[in-house]
Length: 263
Image (cartoon, rainbow, N blue to C red):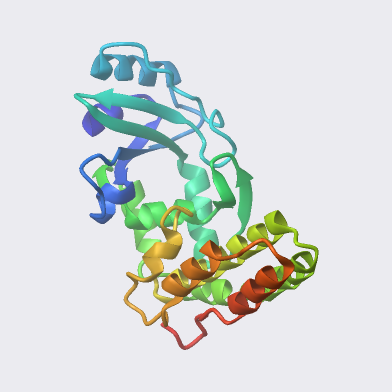
């Protein structure tokens, strides 16, 4: 399939991503294929025709931007009972995020399906973690070389961003006094996600999605001092009364965080 995909006008490279690239997949996990394309040349109709040949029926291919500003576009296929996701990635935009990662710059953006926000340099993480299947022009190889080892500037940036945790929890403390469960829960989950991102950066590991982010901290090659278990316990016991919520906020402030010497 990858060999045929790079024959589509505008598709420059194809990589296996997601859990199958990391070796953490289950038997029923999707096969995620990143399609790195040239925006000026991409032939979406040719992609749809190729998808029809593989599936034996109509497949809707979302064009660039069709799935939102960051997830971009692609298609969902089922081939011989296996779910295969084609995920579009604009080569120029991915290269830009690789450079931002090297410079220690990142941001989160609103994106459907990403409740915490889409991490822009996740594009760089995808390249670093993926297994290139077809890369005739060496595009993926060149970008991967920029990202190995994990950029020290990006690690420092994630650690510096931890000031936001206390900012969020200050707001949560006020909401707790009013018994505002939804607001406290939102602040709490965001604070936990920020710390989890920082732990991944401290360990020199790329994080590309909120899914499994907190759980995966326990698997990092770094002593996270029980972060995953403590965070999970606090979140599942937030409670609904002001006293319970206030206690949860105090416990969240005590969650272990990485520091500049953690790596």
